Image 1 (cartoon, one colour):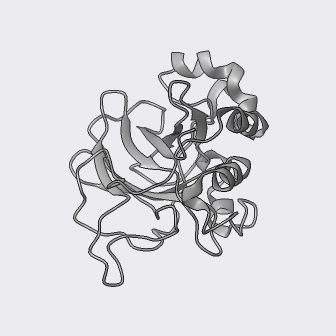
Image 2: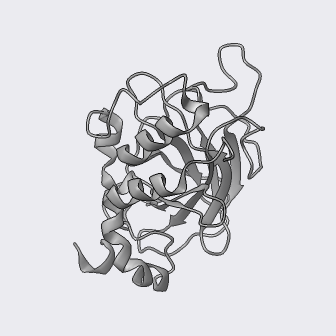
Length: 236
């Protein structure tokens, strides 16, 4: 077996245990609405920019620079306060590598796990990366910023992942062996807790190669930067 891949059966078992699986019956409704996940459609709350945002952005889809880890496609769909996709928005992402290290800081001149993409007509910005590692006191996460067409920054936030999935990936993929299981859960992480369930990405397996695919609908409010959108399917 290719050591960069996970055992597909084991990961599917973890997927079935993840809370997001409960939303799968609503896939058709989400697709009809033009959304890429079955999670709630909401304005994402601001979170701390966290460590090590570096400008200028690197305009590229593949941000791995050949570093190890479980390959992961990351799709962020930027939508307005009425859940309409926003084309031409700029999305910057950055996260640590499998060993929990950030590039471009503390004397390091690297640029791995950093990149910028513009959203298409469907509001989606797509990146090729690896599932992040972790560092003490934080759950696995990806940082991001959203800028509207014209350059107005409207959101700084973070993407999170289900604890069961993170533990399964870190336990089975050799790139994370030096770190072991993350020492913090979503419930214990203050930033993840304040962001809420709507900031947890929908994580699936690509049936063709076993790679991970993470997706999140990112609602932005250019006016107040706050407040919830109506949830999908009349859930309030």
